Amino acid sequence: MRRAVVVTAFFAGLLLIWELAAETGWWSPVLFPSAVSVARYLWGAMNDGTLLEAIRVTLQRLLLGYVIGAAIGLPVGVLTSSSKIMDDTLGSLALGLQTLPSVCWVPFAVLWFGQTESAMLFVVVMGTVWSVIIATNHGARTIPPIYAKAARTMGSRRLHLWMMVMLPASLPFLVSGMKQGWAFAWRSLMAAEIFVTILTGFGLGQLLHYGRELNAMDQVIGAMMVIVLIGLLADRILFAPWERFLHRRWGMDGG
Amino acid sequence: MTNRAAFVGATTQHCSLATSKLDVQSVSKWFRTSRANVHALAEVSMQVAAGQIVCVVGPSGCGKSTLLDIIAGLTQPDAGQVFADGQEVAGPGRERLVVFQEPSLFPWLNVFGNVMFGLRLCPELRGDERRDIAHHYLSLVGLEKFEKAHVHELSGGMKQRVALARALAPDPQVLLMDEPFGALDAMTREHLYDDVQKIWADSRKTVVFVTHNMREATCLGDRILLMSSAPGTIARSFDIPLSRPRSIYNAELVAHAAAVADALRGTMGGGVPE
Image (cartoon, rainbow over all chains, first blue to last red; front, side, top):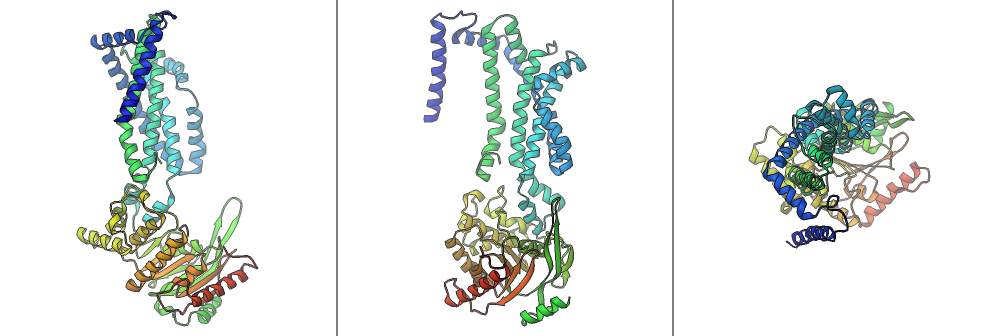
């Protein structure tokens, strides 16, 4: 309760400072819109449906790209952890490509796929898959071998060993790998939506992009706030329950 | 082979090959790495009679844990064999369960779930029998109140008690203990010596107990095998003919421990143990 009051007071204070700073009139309202005008924009966009539609389009792209990226990244990550050769080859490839900011995939994707949904998806998958591989690889290596050893003495073999020991033992790294992947997918999609202008769907990134084109600072800031909010909500809804479970069982965060 | 025969004859009169629960025959093991080829065990032979506690002591790196892994079936020897009840050991099995030094409890299961893990792999038991057995062994190690606790909530000593209960529950023929109390404080250890002796008195399991603590070995062992390192061999064997239960503060026990420690110093060429 006390915590909620402190948090609410902090953000209310921030909004108040913003509003007061805008009220002084020291900066042009075109470049520094007041909190109220941003709220007015958000309310309007909500009511005419553009905001909800943008959120829907963006989340749909995000989910598809993320699922593909994770579905490739998790097994490949386990594979790279399984042998020295795999780590030296696939592992270093993943490490190299992970350092490439995902926005750098945009020119490549546009040349290959044109201004299409596929280009967008490609950027998101490329942004996701390498970080999932690296997180999974690292996590799989940190499973204490003693678990498998102890289980084997008790008669656990093959499928039982994988399902009852290796899978639950890998939960901390699975969750951290999936979370890592989510963060990268989100960043990649925003880059893709800002740079790939297409007509098949108008996402949050495009909302941001056209805010710039139209010199509409209230739209730019409003879209940014929605993007932050979605990131926060995704973290709370998708990952916080798993992290609480891990914390309860393992007694620490994610591994 | 003549070496081994002479060794058995000289040191283990009361333990004939015919009644051995465990029979380790000329086991050798090398570890090959890119930098070196380490000869971990060289023709190690030992016999353990049913219901006996044999402690294996030696300096760090003498191969005593490797020997235990080989008896457990977790590691294959490069030469020689291990027989349990006359059957050659080909892999790990629940007739030889291990209590490890490292924390080996599964964090995704609670205390009760950990003890149940091995029991669920006993197809001859019914569900309610498994639960009864798990309750029984948890109360035997004094943790009946902690059945629902998560592993990370337990102290080091409690964790090893759960590991002991988990290893005892499927009723193994042989209990293998790999420095199980090495990471615990002295007071907790002393409690556990009492518990192990009590449990052993009731169950008469055959136990192989690896340690580098002389007093621990003297307190628990019917026999102490002293290993020397590089390569690991069994240098000497000591019988500990003291009555049970034993206290590590007993003067006679301390004298025995000192004798083993002296012998260990001899095998290490003047080094100080521990």
